[in-house]
Image 1 (cartoon, rainbow, N blue to C red):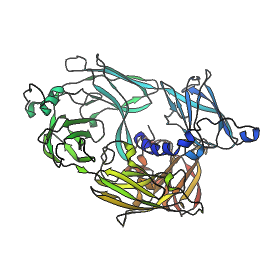
Image 2: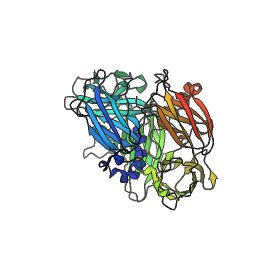
Image 3: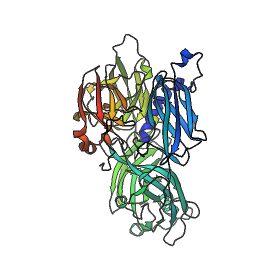
Length: 572
């Protein structure tokens, strides 16, 4: 299982990368002169071995990445023939430790897949005998044929796993490949776990010609009720995702998944696009709610469109105006059952502008530079829609840098409801958003609406956030490294991801949470976590009684000990 959602992690890393530019330029710190200077640095020695067993693995790339720009530089090493590695002259701080080797996946001491480790290094500390375990990656391979047994080239085969994004169930690709001329595919580099396999046939060009009416010699249209085409299938051979059977991969597995596709009746979506500037057209995209299947069509000259070969299910349809001076979009949710959908009307609108000012309340006499901060805009629409309102293009567009005078701005924001949070406050770790006003109204406990006009935000951030530190232990009272520690806010804030705080425990089981708004929390420590499942209310119900309640005041520093909760196979 994957603990993080990579998509959301990528958004946050954009800000971190920008802030870390200066530190990155010092990627390898030269050895200081004299023993006294060297005493302020740390070192790391270890070995990379195959799991299970202890066979050394050579040529593994080790990366030590500073958790924040204030923690110094980044470091790399390569394991030798005996699997050993060594990194010297490390600036003290907190680091993410990753290992990469083709054909292998990193695991922890309990043989579970991991996305790296958290290391805390003190001045002069020498960490020795650090063991990194790698498992052989799994492979899924097979062949895709048609109803006559002939190979189907250019079919898209995807290996999927279920995770949680913002607390909602989401299907995410772990790997994908197109079939070759023999209909064969091979997807390697998979970690152990449960997966689903899907195959999407190549485009039906006859259907595209019929829908767009662009052929030099038009093909007679097939009556709606008689139209059949190849559709997305799920292993072991069903068009219904709910009937898909998961496959369980173990380290080193070579799993065979073959598909034989047969044509079946498909549905058609017809509609029109209005509110277009003169001379412009729009592109229509249809995406399944789980982001697995995508289809689309071009708009005809009269503004109509037709999307064929659609299977029953839940979708979001999106119209984007091509070459518009300002981005114009429209979207609508669709539920397809057993009949065609007619009369869809999409009316693209120009996005709105969000601008405002962030005011800092600091207890320090030192002037704080607001330009070190980034703000993140998140969808506040209460719907299970993977194609959320503001994730239509480059995810970095959701970030806005705060200027020195505290001003910030987002442009071309699609209509919808939103929440805002501080994306990266590593330079001011005790900072939290104290209040959020939209158009003069307090929306600290809700979301705010954006339309085609402008929205003005007034934000106040305080550096009097509380801090919680402590240690996570297992059932034997031993330190539990690599546990996910989450501070879950009180009930009224649980629909607001920005009110949560999370951290990993380091090699000694220690963790630290900073910048918590004052209030009531429940603390949890999980040994493993599938994405952001802790944002799911049903998931939390299972563990509510096992958390540690804590009330904290502004500026308070609390110390706690947590018992790690084992990985659950019964997550909702």
